[in-house]
Image 1 (spheres, rainbow, N blue to C red):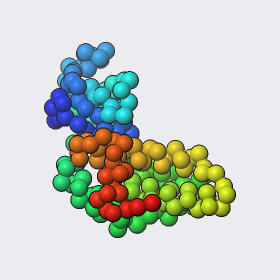
Image 2: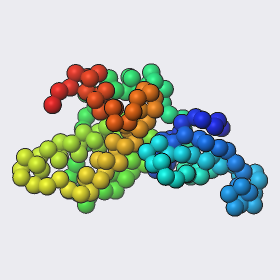
Image 3: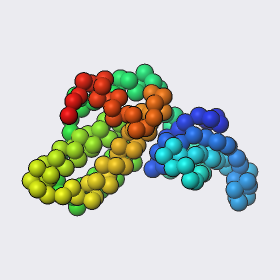
Length: 169
């Protein structure tokens, strides 16, 4: 069980901070044995998420450590891009990757979409809206967790990755 104030990663909700832990009677349920984390999402200051403690259906884990984040960032240049086909055939694959807790798959997806988008633009085509949406979702998941672990702002993560790996445009 996690504590109030800790950052966790929960299913599709992404990174959030636990602001309270309550039994279900406090949120309209009847079972005092069921506990819920009340989580303030990192990237959405508007609402709260209710996450069942010890849920088997929606996994919850602690945000990676600073050391793990620093190691992951250094490994990024060596991670292969995901081979992509047409947008239609890729959507199920995109969803599966984003549901996983696998940072390497998130990075592979981002790299694959970056390459695909660059090729489309160089061919005079627009970036596909589906690819653009999933790129944003993958970056949000990866960057928000790295931001918490590295104790920097989410919008600083991409520059941090570039500087650690000496990447220039």
